[in-house]
Image (cartoon, rainbow, N blue to C red):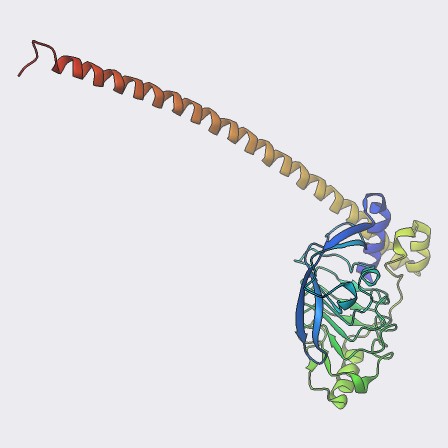
Length: 309
């Protein structure tokens, strides 16, 4: 919840600086995934870290005989900078059934990030900063057979996360190496999966209520207050988070100033190096000139009629 409020406030204060679109570059390849087998994948690492939420263009060269309709998997490597789940992939790849998102700084899945993929069967959200998962995440994806949340920082999982799914169809469920739970099932054992789900509800309880990421850009301070300030302590938290956001902005400005100082120092250093190089070239030229003179003088002396024989 804390991150959700901060995220919303961030969008309010920074909305005029956020670009709403971007282009991704696909490295097309064939992957083999557990349970569902071979998939044709768009692999990408060029997702922006701090701007844009909508994919408006896709670049890349397909394998021979393939096109966008053949793409059934999207793999995103966030490189520890990705802050959000990009939208609008389905406009380019209408047949997605597998999504792999690794190595991000995403902390919350609000619940509507994957509504555009009704054919989704395989979901792998691995090695990220994820702490909170909404109950609504799989409401529009009832065909899931693999749900993987291994190696995150999960503390809160919506009570009804698995309610829209057919538990008997699930083959892999992983919540290993998380804060509130460390458990997985990879053999399709329905009894074990039900036990894991019950453990999630016991150890990672979360009755989630927060806005979707698609609407937070239009939130105002008033609606934020209506959504979150149900008591004084939460209102105080919002104020604290606003102060924190301002502090973060100031820190970023300070870092920018330091970067400018470093650049200026580097420019000065480069000038000094150029001056030293120039002086060195002059000295070398003087030495070469003197050596040439000495050689000529030595030759003159050795060939002089009075020179020692």
